[in-house]
Image (cartoon, rainbow, N blue to C red; front, side, top):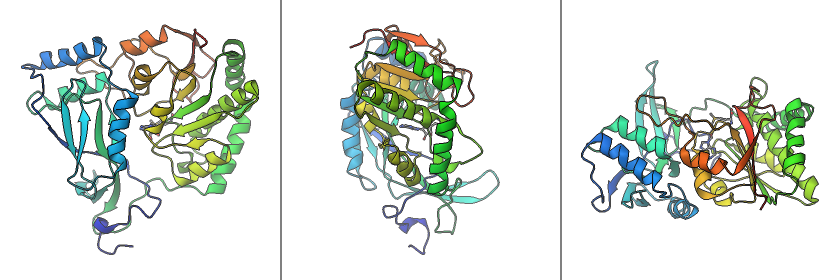
Length: 369
Ligand SMILES: C[S@@+](CC[C@H](N)C(=O)[O-])C[C@H]1O[C@@H](n2cnc3c(N)ncnc32)[C@H](O)[C@@H]1O
């Protein structure tokens, strides 16, 4: 263990509990950008134009290309190349190992040790908001994939990371999950979910279930059951399919917030925890996708990469959160998402008003595939 502050903290040898603070990598254009907007309106219009003309903002190929570079764990100063949606290549400079200083609202000096880079996802509305925040001079690139560094937080002078939400003991988490799963199975919402599946998805070809952003169960046991109940729903989906088909079905869960206790507890129920961006690479037309209140634009990413047989997520409306001055959303709706869902039938199975979910409904693809 290091004795002289965060710079020598052995980040690769311990089960790290990252802070909630992520730090963006600095960037530069590899070549002059192909398009130089003169006004903010023109720049905003260009993002809309690219979107409306069908340019993919997300594809498995794009994600794989950036992921492969992140997997090499680029040292501080090394470059990661990303192609923008306008075709411009952008270089992000890795800041792994850098220390950032901040003072908290109550005057405490904090230091953040930047960890290996991960992918950050920006959909159309995010690119537009980013542009409004920064203004046109020195504007950010039109990149739907960028680089950011998770971090460990230290009080200045200390060499032990601050852990805001301690991990609960494995046995307690396992027991709480078991209890919540049993209670959940008795609920009206669970019964209705199964009825809808039996009636409307009995013959869809499905080979895997993918849960996204269901959050770490291990940071809570009693006070907030949301994460437990959402994972219980994931288990119900997997069990329903396994019963329907008489075979084992692969069930994945991706959330960067999972700790080793979550991974162990979920593994004991045959749910495989995968690291970002593996879920996007797994999702296909024969998947069930389930997410609740994600901090990542799940809807826009899925709409660009696949037509899953069953989707369970927030009811999609017409509020796209892409207007200046309007609050941004981490997972907004968009015209592409609505166009995709025209091929789906919508079912309210009772989770829409349930506080354990977030306006959650089910979409089943009309074409069984
Ligand atoms: C607002 S919380 C919602 C958690 C939980 N579903 C709920 O309803 O309370 C957003 C979650 O999105 C997760 N998240 C962020 N980026 C993600 C990614 N790339 N893939 C999957 N989950 C992600 C966060 O770790 C966090 O657990």
